[in-house]
Length: 446
Image: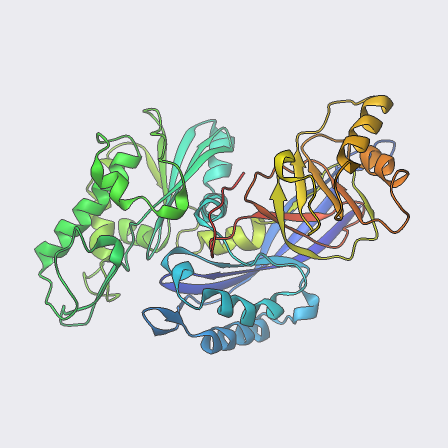
């Protein structure tokens, strides 16, 4: 027996804004005599919006009203309403996530995406969504190859190292096509602070072709360093984004390279240098002629749409074979994930991430329940990597007051600094989105 969910993905990026509508088919993969094991068996794209330039009031603020009009119009074209959306994600990505009013824009859009929506994405989650949306994860799984995926957008390049279909690490560089903008005559209209120290030109100056090519070469050199094709140097550290966390571990030689993002289209096809009013075409050709494209490489199944398709089709997972919940009002949004060190004494809703136990005995389960209850005052919200959620939830329920709020998920891996959105039940499973927030804090995607 299967169930179908409607999922909306909305990506508000440095350069472009776009939306996709997807259909997710949920199936029970277990036999009729076994514990239910619900999985998303099929992902089907029903509608893709045009690609819009992200509307801005100025270089530091997005135009929330204009964004809302775009989304409302696309809902009408797709033939959907807010009430018919089951799941999905709104993500503000790249340099756009650093705009002064990013949080206000999210609040203005949130009610258009149904009851279950990812509010924001940091570079870790964006890297994962782009790698999945471009098909790089599936390519690695199908071929057994190690793949380094680079999603090169307007303001940043999101990296994901994938081995046999599993993402090992993510990273992010200030490398993108909109870091310098120009008018039709070649006069500079914007220079990102991220490249001011390697591009000695300012707003109002005319930029000659060779100056743009020199900048593109330097940005490409940073990507080559990240890929292990050039000896790492200070340039890599200079271009590394603050939100991406620890310094990138250089991949072993031999990884296949995969590209997506708007600049990837300029790798494939040579464009007039000022066609888009930025350095995207020049950067794309610099990458095409660099060491990055001398060995095996592929362009993603999706390029400019990779992240939004990842958001619409791949942001949701299901909590595994068993769940337990009592007195929980769904959906839950932006629940912080903590580890055992920060669990005791918490009164605000937080979710404890823990590995759980493999095939636990009754005694082990009850002992764990008693340890969790000791000193914890808030709602009992847990996510475990092992399949023991129902047994643990029942053990907690008999030891806590009848009105206690209890939620136990399994097969969910989330690290300190992550946040969870948890939707209403789908059959006997719960849809879960693991995410990071880039606004006001730093976090890591697990």
